[in-house]
Image: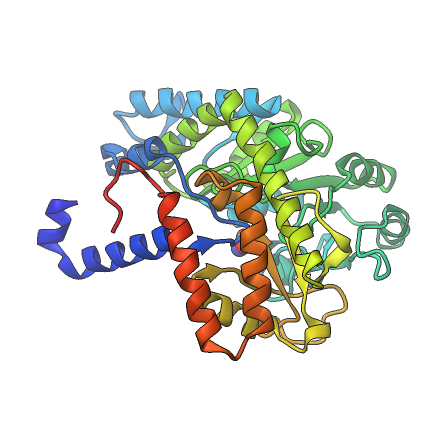
Amino acid sequence: MSSLALFDPEIFDLINKEHKRQVEGLELIASENVVAREVMEAMGTILTNKYAEGYPGKRYYGGCEFHDAIENIARDRLCKLFGAEHANVQPHSGSQANEAVYLSCLKPKDKILSQSLNNGGHLSHGDPANMSGKFFDVSFYGVDYDTEVLDYGTIEELARKVKPNLIVCGASAYPREIDFKAFAEIAEDVGAKSMADIAHISGLCCAGLHNSPVGVTTYTTSTTHKTLRGPRGGVIMCGKESANSIDKAVFPGMQGGPLMHVIAAKAVCFREALTDDYKEYARQIVKNSRTLASTLEDNNFRLVSGGTDNHLCLLDLSDKNISGQRAETALGKAGITVNKNTIPREDLTPFETSGIRIGTPTITTRGMKEDECRQIGDWIAKVLKNIDNNNVISEVKKEVTALCLKYPLYPEIRDI
Ligand code: DSN
């Protein structure tokens, strides 16, 4: 970093401050992770200098022979990881991967049926504020309000009524296992295509800890930076019959030049995800999530759906008279980063919310296990029960920092 420090001290200083924040704090944002040093290394290379519009063997620029090899490796590794027939590794993000699927199989005003944002879905699944909600005719399913889990019978009834062209499943804030086969069957029954967005759980799917939609739904999309622990970006997987239309939708349909430094980093991430160590990591994410969730329950907090099967839990704070926004701020002061989140039957705005989402991918990467998760659950409870007591919050922050310093982000890089 020395030349950056000399050339642009302002940016260098801010990167260092963020480094210190990450090192000293507990990152419990369910969609974040800490990438391997090798993944970062691939991203910071001369691959960023090159245009490579097109696909391996069919580019619109000369000099792409090494880019072709890199992209082929990334595609092959992703196919191997998930048992996919075809992979596109060019989407710059999960939202762009989703939009490329829509472009490949829908016309403007076609019908989408998807999980609503308030019930754990994602903006790019047809929310009115998103392009997908403006260009398509979107209907939403939610969770059953008694059980707070998906009820496939009700979703099937809705699908028969709506007759969608595409059923979207997969969520951003749903703590339970999703039955992708049930979605694929409902879609087939009503003559729709199906898309599973596994951005949050892709690391769990490839490690065999969650059923995988690859080869079950028509399309599978994912980000690469959440449980999968790669660079920020997106991917699409599908059967051979959809390969051509998906590739055309990504380029030239949605995007121009692929980010080849990121595609190289994706390839490194897929190599890592194919290892037994990674599978063990994924197992620990779920163990940690369950431990954190049960510790919060032991502290008399209510969990949406009563628990978790995956990397996250949703805490309902409505009976505590604390908004998600207030909880996020107080925990932030204690060095514990979470995000406010809507819960089923939400009464408050998405900016305020009645809940918080808590995830374990990052702390698991740092090496924390069940004991640390019990401690973290107790700290969260202590802060929320003493939300106006700055002395208590400061005490917790000191303990949080001490724990974090025992689990460095990158032991070989000078922290702070
Ligand atoms: N914003 C991501 C999340 O936090 O779930 C999804 O794109």
